Image (cartoon, rainbow, N blue to C red; front, side):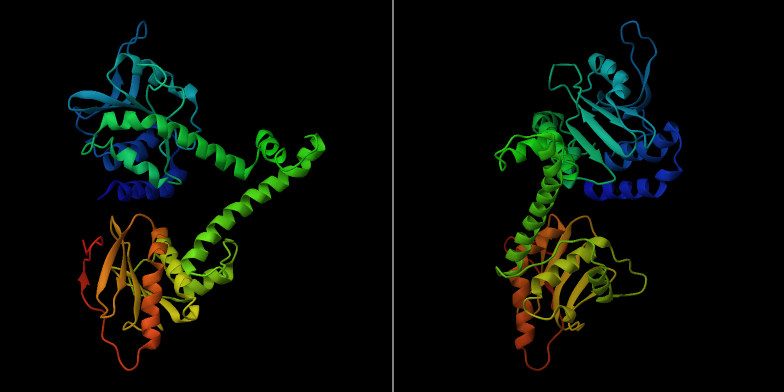
Length: 382
């Protein structure tokens, strides 16, 4: 099981049980220990790997404890301090981490409430823990771009030097992304002033500020929507193509759900539905969208023309650690293409459109989908 799959499993556990957790000790048992064992791969019951209630005398401070110390190759490498889930994390919570960081070999410190994990190191001064984390992992909304860095702290792939070398860039990229997200959601005065003074020639008075706050918020939202639509236009293959990105479209969601045929004992995931929407958006320039139907099976999620299993458009192989898109050639031989994320389906828009056009020009019967093969640059069935 890859780290992304392990992280998603823990995220599901947190969502399911978070409301029932009321103490710090329950948080450690329910979420923090599974993070150390399930995600990072250390044996929480082996004191040579995970030391609970880790003690190290710090100056006049004797017998102070930190929740967990993680050892690798006999050396303490990571310190973990846990707080109760739902409690906001503040730097004041990390006082023991600061003290222990200076007297142990650990180069990584983690402050967590079981759902949000803040990772610290000593970028600003040697052997002194930074005041700001270089990586923040939120299991309520996992940023997949951070998982390769997290993997470097796992037992099987531990690479401290690589983590430290990437920490500086991660620290500032993460902070910039969080600042941008906050500004897009609720713009601050400095952000409003920065943009307003570039389009408005008058003085930036309180009246002008009040006028431009909603304009800045609206402009940034429209900018994001237009970026998404530009990508969809390219995928659909025409400058006139347009797809609304509004999330408040229940009639569209119902249409998608009605177009999905599910076998018994099969659970259709939101990720599979997202993939189906993308495939259908790509091919709707060739055929009426109502003719593109999905059929979910136990091993893959199929997209068919006219609900006919002799006319497969694509298969979504998402029920595994690595995602694949199955595409078909003239003989209906399936080739599985690896995907890093669902949006990568757009890169294969042309082959999907060609597949649909072949069915539209076919006469007579058709044979079933053939075997799976691997071409140059493509990955066969795992």
